[in-house]
Length: 265
Ligand SMILES: [Fe+2]
Image (cartoon, rainbow, N blue to C red; front, side, top):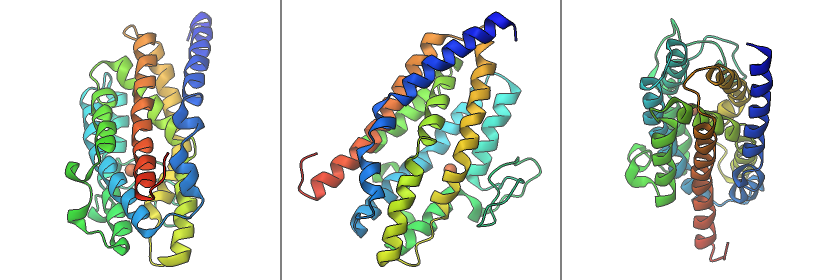
Protein backbone atom coordinates (compact mmCIF):
# COMPACT_ATOMS: atom_id res chain seq x y z
CA UNK A 1 0.00 0.00 0.00
CA UNK A 2 1.37 3.42 -0.96
CA UNK A 3 2.42 5.75 1.86
CA UNK A 4 -0.22 8.34 1.07
CA UNK A 5 -2.93 5.66 1.11
CA UNK A 6 -1.62 4.36 4.46
CA UNK A 7 -2.00 7.84 5.98
CA UNK A 8 -5.52 8.07 4.54
CA UNK A 9 -6.36 4.67 5.95
CA UNK A 10 -5.08 5.60 9.42
CA UNK A 11 -7.11 8.82 9.35
CA UNK A 12 -10.23 6.96 8.24
CA UNK A 13 -9.75 4.21 10.82
CA UNK A 14 -9.52 6.82 13.57
CA UNK A 15 -12.77 8.41 12.37
CA UNK A 16 -14.53 5.03 12.33
CA UNK A 17 -13.22 3.94 15.72
CA UNK A 18 -14.32 7.21 17.31
CA UNK A 19 -17.74 6.76 15.76
CA UNK A 20 -18.07 3.22 17.18
CA UNK A 21 -16.57 3.98 20.59
CA UNK A 22 -18.77 7.04 21.04
CA UNK A 23 -22.04 5.39 20.08
CA UNK A 24 -24.50 4.96 22.97
CA UNK A 25 -24.67 1.21 22.36
CA UNK A 26 -20.99 1.01 23.31
CA UNK A 27 -20.93 3.73 25.99
CA UNK A 28 -24.22 3.14 27.79
CA UNK A 29 -25.93 -0.19 27.20
CA UNK A 30 -28.22 0.07 30.24
CA UNK A 31 -29.67 -3.40 29.79
CA UNK A 32 -26.28 -5.10 29.72
CA UNK A 33 -25.04 -3.07 32.70
CA UNK A 34 -28.14 -4.03 34.68
CA UNK A 35 -28.01 -7.67 33.58
CA UNK A 36 -24.39 -8.01 34.74
CA UNK A 37 -25.59 -7.38 38.30
CA UNK A 38 -27.06 -10.87 38.33
CA UNK A 39 -30.46 -9.88 39.68
CA UNK A 40 -32.46 -10.95 36.61
CA UNK A 41 -35.35 -13.23 37.46
CA UNK A 42 -36.10 -16.50 35.68
CA UNK A 43 -38.73 -14.73 33.59
CA UNK A 44 -36.24 -12.02 32.63
CA UNK A 45 -33.62 -14.61 31.64
CA UNK A 46 -36.27 -16.43 29.58
CA UNK A 47 -37.13 -13.20 27.77
CA UNK A 48 -33.46 -12.62 26.95
CA UNK A 49 -33.15 -16.22 25.72
CA UNK A 50 -36.12 -15.85 23.37
CA UNK A 51 -35.14 -12.47 21.94
CA UNK A 52 -31.51 -13.50 21.53
CA UNK A 53 -32.61 -16.71 19.80
CA UNK A 54 -34.58 -14.69 17.25
CA UNK A 55 -31.58 -12.45 16.54
CA UNK A 56 -29.17 -15.38 16.45
CA UNK A 57 -31.36 -17.40 14.08
CA UNK A 58 -32.20 -14.56 11.71
CA UNK A 59 -28.53 -13.49 11.70
CA UNK A 60 -27.91 -16.61 9.60
CA UNK A 61 -30.08 -15.11 6.85
CA UNK A 62 -28.11 -11.85 6.94
CA UNK A 63 -24.82 -13.77 6.86
CA UNK A 64 -25.96 -15.74 3.79
CA UNK A 65 -26.86 -12.47 2.09
CA UNK A 66 -23.41 -11.10 2.93
CA UNK A 67 -21.82 -14.17 1.32
CA UNK A 68 -23.95 -13.85 -1.81
CA UNK A 69 -23.09 -10.15 -2.12
CA UNK A 70 -19.34 -10.57 -1.49
CA UNK A 71 -17.12 -8.73 -3.97
CA UNK A 72 -14.13 -11.06 -3.92
CA UNK A 73 -13.65 -14.80 -3.49
CA UNK A 74 -11.64 -14.06 -0.32
CA UNK A 75 -14.47 -12.19 1.39
CA UNK A 76 -16.94 -14.74 0.02
CA UNK A 77 -14.96 -17.46 1.76
CA UNK A 78 -14.48 -15.41 4.94
CA UNK A 79 -18.25 -14.99 5.08
CA UNK A 80 -18.75 -18.70 4.54
CA UNK A 81 -16.41 -19.51 7.43
CA UNK A 82 -18.81 -17.66 9.72
CA UNK A 83 -21.95 -19.00 8.05
CA UNK A 84 -20.93 -22.65 8.07
CA UNK A 85 -19.57 -22.42 11.61
CA UNK A 86 -22.87 -20.89 12.68
CA UNK A 87 -24.71 -23.81 11.07
CA UNK A 88 -22.65 -26.58 12.65
CA UNK A 89 -19.17 -27.01 11.12
CA UNK A 90 -16.56 -26.51 13.83
CA UNK A 91 -13.30 -24.68 13.20
CA UNK A 92 -10.18 -26.85 13.24
CA UNK A 93 -8.02 -24.59 15.45
CA UNK A 94 -7.17 -24.31 19.09
CA UNK A 95 -9.89 -25.70 21.33
CA UNK A 96 -11.25 -23.91 24.39
CA UNK A 97 -12.01 -25.38 27.82
CA UNK A 98 -15.27 -26.82 26.46
CA UNK A 99 -13.38 -28.61 23.69
CA UNK A 100 -14.69 -26.32 20.93
CA UNK A 101 -12.28 -24.54 18.59
CA UNK A 102 -12.40 -20.76 18.58
CA UNK A 103 -10.22 -20.28 15.48
CA UNK A 104 -9.05 -21.97 12.32
CA UNK A 105 -11.15 -22.88 9.30
CA UNK A 106 -14.24 -24.94 8.43
CA UNK A 107 -12.38 -26.21 5.34
CA UNK A 108 -12.35 -30.00 5.48
CA UNK A 109 -14.39 -29.87 8.67
CA UNK A 110 -17.27 -32.06 9.67
CA UNK A 111 -20.85 -30.92 10.06
CA UNK A 112 -22.65 -31.83 13.27
CA UNK A 113 -26.23 -30.85 14.01
CA UNK A 114 -25.37 -30.29 17.65
CA UNK A 115 -22.56 -27.87 16.78
CA UNK A 116 -24.95 -25.30 15.30
CA UNK A 117 -25.01 -22.18 17.44
CA UNK A 118 -28.77 -22.28 17.41
CA UNK A 119 -28.65 -25.76 18.94
CA UNK A 120 -26.34 -24.44 21.67
CA UNK A 121 -29.07 -21.90 22.39
CA UNK A 122 -31.69 -24.66 22.42
CA UNK A 123 -29.67 -26.44 25.10
CA UNK A 124 -29.44 -23.19 27.04
CA UNK A 125 -33.18 -22.60 26.71
CA UNK A 126 -34.27 -26.09 27.80
CA UNK A 127 -33.66 -25.72 31.57
CA UNK A 128 -35.60 -22.45 31.36
CA UNK A 129 -38.60 -24.42 30.17
CA UNK A 130 -38.32 -23.26 26.54
CA UNK A 131 -38.59 -25.80 23.74
CA UNK A 132 -37.87 -25.67 20.02
CA UNK A 133 -41.27 -24.17 19.24
CA UNK A 134 -40.75 -21.35 21.77
CA UNK A 135 -37.62 -19.79 20.27
CA UNK A 136 -35.92 -18.51 17.13
CA UNK A 137 -38.86 -17.57 14.89
CA UNK A 138 -39.86 -14.09 13.72
CA UNK A 139 -43.14 -14.50 15.54
CA UNK A 140 -41.25 -14.69 18.85
CA UNK A 141 -39.50 -11.37 18.30
CA UNK A 142 -40.65 -8.09 19.80
CA UNK A 143 -40.89 -5.15 17.36
CA UNK A 144 -37.52 -3.91 18.66
CA UNK A 145 -35.83 -7.26 18.07
CA UNK A 146 -37.34 -7.57 14.59
CA UNK A 147 -36.24 -4.04 13.73
CA UNK A 148 -32.67 -5.03 14.57
CA UNK A 149 -32.91 -8.25 12.52
CA UNK A 150 -34.34 -6.37 9.54
CA UNK A 151 -31.58 -3.76 9.78
CA UNK A 152 -29.04 -6.59 9.72
CA UNK A 153 -30.56 -7.94 6.51
CA UNK A 154 -30.73 -4.49 4.96
CA UNK A 155 -27.31 -3.13 5.96
CA UNK A 156 -25.07 -6.08 6.90
CA UNK A 157 -26.49 -8.00 3.94
CA UNK A 158 -26.44 -5.00 1.57
CA UNK A 159 -25.35 -5.45 -2.02
CA UNK A 160 -23.44 -2.16 -1.87
CA UNK A 161 -20.01 -3.33 -0.65
CA UNK A 162 -19.10 -0.14 1.25
CA UNK A 163 -22.37 -0.37 3.16
CA UNK A 164 -21.91 -4.06 3.93
CA UNK A 165 -18.33 -3.49 5.07
CA UNK A 166 -19.39 -0.65 7.35
CA UNK A 167 -22.07 -2.83 8.91
CA UNK A 168 -19.61 -5.70 9.46
CA UNK A 169 -17.17 -3.37 11.13
CA UNK A 170 -19.88 -1.99 13.38
CA UNK A 171 -21.27 -5.39 14.36
CA UNK A 172 -17.90 -6.90 15.20
CA UNK A 173 -16.67 -3.92 17.17
CA UNK A 174 -19.94 -3.64 19.03
CA UNK A 175 -19.71 -7.33 19.88
CA UNK A 176 -16.14 -6.88 21.11
CA UNK A 177 -17.22 -3.98 23.33
CA UNK A 178 -18.01 -6.20 26.28
CA UNK A 179 -21.70 -7.15 26.28
CA UNK A 180 -20.93 -10.89 26.16
CA UNK A 181 -18.98 -10.59 29.43
CA UNK A 182 -21.82 -8.61 31.01
CA UNK A 183 -24.40 -11.22 30.01
CA UNK A 184 -22.13 -14.03 31.19
CA UNK A 185 -21.69 -12.38 34.58
CA UNK A 186 -25.45 -12.13 35.02
CA UNK A 187 -26.06 -15.66 33.77
CA UNK A 188 -23.40 -17.10 36.10
CA UNK A 189 -25.14 -15.46 39.05
CA UNK A 190 -28.54 -16.77 37.93
CA UNK A 191 -27.13 -20.27 37.40
CA UNK A 192 -25.52 -20.30 40.85
CA UNK A 193 -28.68 -19.01 42.48
CA UNK A 194 -31.39 -21.11 40.92
CA UNK A 195 -30.52 -23.02 37.75
CA UNK A 196 -27.41 -25.19 38.22
CA UNK A 197 -28.03 -27.20 35.04
CA UNK A 198 -27.93 -24.12 32.77
CA UNK A 199 -25.23 -24.63 30.07
CA UNK A 200 -23.44 -21.38 29.23
CA UNK A 201 -21.46 -22.65 26.22
CA UNK A 202 -23.24 -20.42 23.70
CA UNK A 203 -22.29 -17.26 25.60
CA UNK A 204 -18.77 -18.31 26.61
CA UNK A 205 -17.79 -19.37 23.10
CA UNK A 206 -18.98 -16.13 21.52
CA UNK A 207 -17.12 -14.08 24.08
CA UNK A 208 -13.91 -16.01 23.28
CA UNK A 209 -14.08 -15.46 19.51
CA UNK A 210 -14.93 -11.77 19.56
CA UNK A 211 -11.45 -10.29 19.80
CA UNK A 212 -10.38 -12.36 16.83
CA UNK A 213 -13.40 -11.23 14.80
CA UNK A 214 -12.68 -7.58 15.50
CA UNK A 215 -9.08 -8.01 14.34
CA UNK A 216 -10.39 -9.72 11.22
CA UNK A 217 -12.72 -6.86 10.26
CA UNK A 218 -9.80 -4.44 10.75
CA UNK A 219 -8.02 -6.37 7.96
CA UNK A 220 -11.20 -6.26 5.92
CA UNK A 221 -11.38 -2.50 6.30
CA UNK A 222 -7.82 -2.16 5.01
CA UNK A 223 -8.65 -4.40 2.04
CA UNK A 224 -11.87 -2.53 1.23
CA UNK A 225 -10.27 0.88 1.66
CA UNK A 226 -7.91 0.26 -1.25
CA UNK A 227 -10.69 -0.70 -3.69
CA UNK A 228 -11.90 1.63 -6.44
CA UNK A 229 -15.51 1.16 -5.34
CA UNK A 230 -14.86 2.16 -1.74
CA UNK A 231 -17.12 4.99 -0.57
CA UNK A 232 -16.18 6.47 2.82
CA UNK A 233 -19.50 8.17 3.42
CA UNK A 234 -21.51 5.01 2.64
CA UNK A 235 -19.28 3.06 5.04
CA UNK A 236 -19.70 5.63 7.83
CA UNK A 237 -23.45 5.85 7.30
CA UNK A 238 -23.67 2.05 7.55
CA UNK A 239 -21.68 2.05 10.81
CA UNK A 240 -24.09 4.52 12.37
CA UNK A 241 -27.24 2.89 10.98
CA UNK A 242 -26.13 -0.56 12.12
CA UNK A 243 -25.22 0.60 15.63
CA UNK A 244 -28.55 2.42 15.83
CA UNK A 245 -30.23 -0.90 14.93
CA UNK A 246 -28.27 -2.73 17.61
CA UNK A 247 -29.24 -0.07 20.13
CA UNK A 248 -32.92 -0.57 19.35
CA UNK A 249 -32.52 -4.25 20.28
CA UNK A 250 -30.94 -3.52 23.68
CA UNK A 251 -33.22 -0.56 24.42
CA UNK A 252 -36.16 -2.85 23.64
CA UNK A 253 -34.95 -5.38 26.21
CA UNK A 254 -34.45 -2.59 28.72
CA UNK A 255 -37.93 -1.18 28.11
CA UNK A 256 -39.46 -4.68 28.41
CA UNK A 257 -37.67 -5.22 31.70
CA UNK A 258 -38.86 -1.88 33.07
CA UNK A 259 -42.42 -2.45 31.88
CA UNK A 260 -42.52 -5.90 33.50
CA UNK A 261 -41.09 -4.49 36.73
CA UNK A 262 -43.50 -1.54 36.66
CA UNK A 263 -40.67 0.96 36.49
CA UNK A 264 -40.09 3.96 34.28
CA UNK A 265 -36.88 3.69 32.17
FE1 LIG B 1 -22.91 -17.51 16.62
